[in-house]
Length: 135
Image 1 (cartoon, helix red, strand yellow):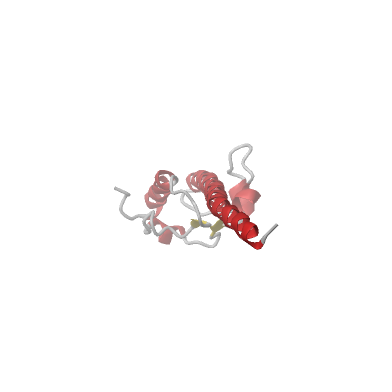
Image 2 (tube, helix red, strand yellow):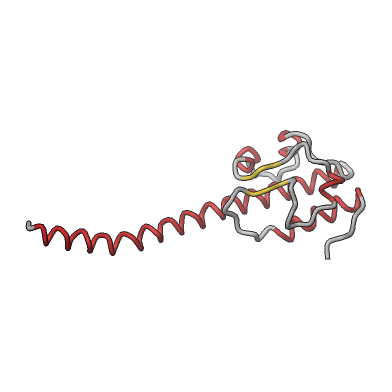
């Protein structure tokens, strides 16, 4: 095969593979964002349950958090997809907005479809620790 033919093959291959690689990367990013979203939702639900049953207290350990998870939720796996501050002060968290909430933070990328659940958790913290309710 001549050099010219090899250059044509390489050019055609490049033209095809660049969009394919971007498509694969976009699909992978969306899948990771979906994992992080589900982890956030599971962590928020378990935290909400803990806060309500312990009169505004924040779960101090992963074991405490896991004890309030829904059946079938794998909290060890959940914690792999987010940053959870087990030393957080619930009174301080009650004064944060959902945009700046620091008690549970997803790893990036993450779809933001958990905002309503997070606002509900913050409102619950505010019932016990004061602060304005979320509009």
